[in-house]
Image 1 (cartoon, rainbow, N blue to C red):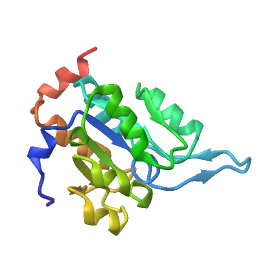
Image 2 (cartoon, helix red, strand yellow):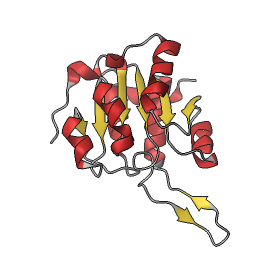
Image 3 (cartoon, helix red, strand yellow):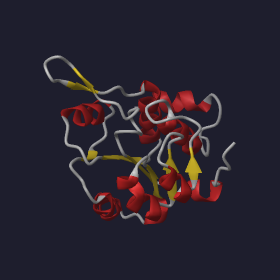
Image 4 (cartoon, rainbow, N blue to C red):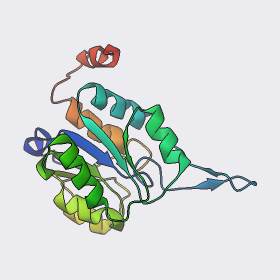
Length: 176
């Protein structure tokens, strides 16, 4: 089992995540008409919703520019969506200014080389179980779950467990 750096977790106020390979399994499906589809974990979405209700800031940052990411962010009521971003540190810097935060207060989940610059700076750098080896080498935490299969929920639960133990989590869910 991965050792959990509780001291780092306690500082976190913002969770930012990549899309492909983190919120999805990294696969893209195409219909006969050329329509792209992606599968998202409902459990990951619940975790992000609970974190948002608990007062954490949530952001999605992706190099792609798709209606799919826009729709997922909308469903989860995530207003900080950055698409078409090559240097993801710029998006995080924007969020740090917007919310008056520091890098130590950022948890970031990224699976591939385009996430390395953010993972190197984040207060809590997380890589999914099936993320790239180079990312895992600098991660503070590697999830037991794969991308698109609960890795985001695992991180959300680590953060939520700091304040919302056991059945108290239902009170958070019912919170408007």
